[in-house]
Length: 317
Figure 1 (cartoon, rainbow, N blue to C red):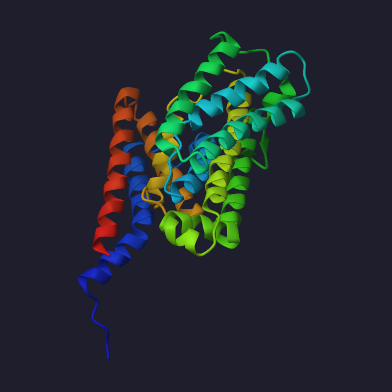
Figure 2: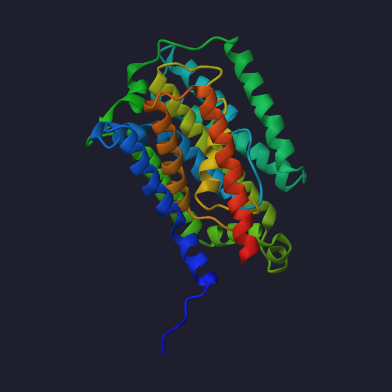
């Protein structure tokens, strides 16, 4: 006896493959508009461009799954970058500079996590305040001027390649693997999803929800430090305004990839698709010479559309 396919079944199937359909549609549309889009060099450029935002998006995925948000990631990226730059501009050891930059981002992430998980301050308020604090400290530290003349051994991290791909791409792939293992194969990942799905139920079942949230924001801080290192090495300067607006890109990529703004749902593979979709849109707009101001409008519309789609999917269930 054949099973009748209902409208609800069709909606579920479309929802399951919607990201793939959107990705394919975008690639076809942009390649028609510009024949150079599918060139090997441009594909490499896309992956190089999305690597830093992708690392931030991996961290953001954990935060959003817990039902939170982190608006400070762009500022933490900038602060971490100038800390590392200040150490290598004076002839310091590049390894210590890398460690210092990562630790700088991690410390701010831990502070965010402590205030949100133990002091019970709303994530939006904490991270909005931290956005301003970190950016202010960065400008005070640099006196508003970029730090230049960086050690070539340090800048090689962001400018050199391995097996035909830039080092930032390999680091992004590494963070995807780390994020996937944590979220999808460990108890910590299952607890993260449980906290976002229903925090009260998670507490009742014995999960230390405060520690889970602390981990999510700390991990995001670590990602910010790593992204700050790559940004500084890539641009050969520790710029005090580096990372401005990157929080929107990271949030958009995670949400487009299916991470629910309400918490409790998300995958690292979905975030990868979201980063790719967002990167293709941005790359397509760039090669079509669309104004940066228009691109900001498009980014905002994408975020609103992704949240609306998530709400619609939840209502349909």
